Length: 111
Length: 114
Image 1: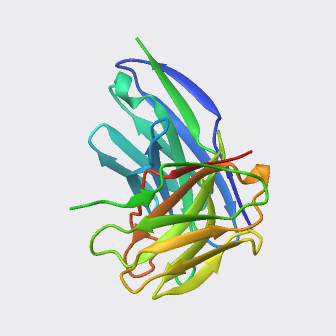
Image 2: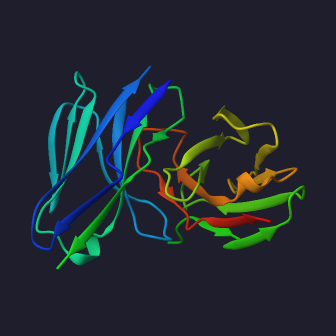
């Protein structure tokens, strides 16, 4: 089975840096997605990590450690518009289709 | 380029009724996955359709069924609705059934069962 843990809520200040953690225990693993979801809207893709290490994309970076079953999403220079839920999702091995999402971390950015 | 479109956006049904939700994938995509997202939860995988066949199913009862048409659009049907079926239903499209490529989500259908 799949088990994914993320903090339920986080608060951070505009302009600051925040790290959202995700740990997973899975029977099979290919990679890990991060999605952003504003209230009432569809999730939108942020990153996909397959290999260990840090991938940077503008203000957002994502890290993966396959051996530790651990990932984090790093948001720099926080803006008010970054207030949203951040979902991590694990993809199965090739040939399988079920993507498993965590419950999401609701981030509130305050002035 | 139209993204993923879902209809209707909102729906209210009575317990015991049946409902059909529709999804048109992003242009160039041939695979549709359906998810149920309860309030405050992450999306839960219902099933995926590729080449007009259901390829994998999550932990959902047979009351949940689907279909994919030759133009790659898809329907999700739920029979004998329960109050617990109230949720946001998301459709995601991708290419060639791959689970490790970016999925594009529609805006969802908000289903309320009363």
